[in-house]
Image 1 (spheres, rainbow, N blue to C red):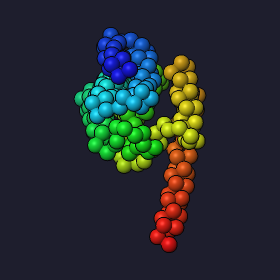
Image 2: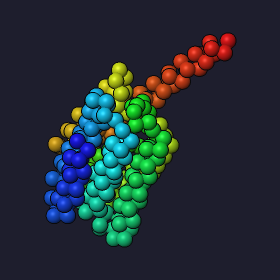
Image 3: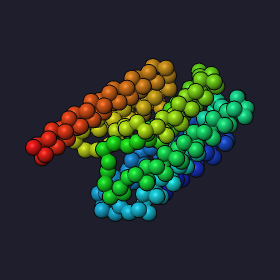
Image 4: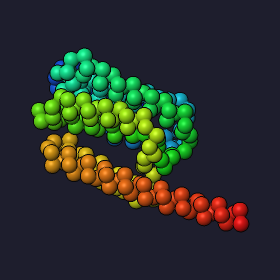
Length: 225
């Protein structure tokens, strides 16, 4: 699955180079699903390892770092000249930093319920949307979105990851469906639905976090009492 992710990312770059931007988006969309599958399979078969974690991050650096940065540049940012190139580079560097920080802070044998900063596949989703909506989004607006994604990835905001038995996981699953609709039918309507649902996920995660902190505090008071 990780190797397939790498191949999809590289094929997306080749497709974008040839001007087949929709094909590039579809390949990166496939990479998103492959990225979710490899970790789940590794944990299911008890095959997790530090090597697998590093390979997964390297594949993400290509498929959700370099590939979407080049895709956004090819689709829109190139019209801004050197500024557009610097914006694309800023996104790539932020993605690599985010992945490196994740590896340092996480445990390859466990699946954390929270992650620091916007996950790179989610950030890549916005750059893919830029490519699909390139005829309706001004290059300057595209640059703003790309920079916002870069800042979000390197931020210290805690966001939800997929995990079993959580309402946030269910909301994330629906969020994937809304993004699938955007990929199939790119329009301002599907973009709006996807973003509104992302806000719902964020608010639900914040509420779940506050509930978890309250429970932990009560437990601490009981132990110390």
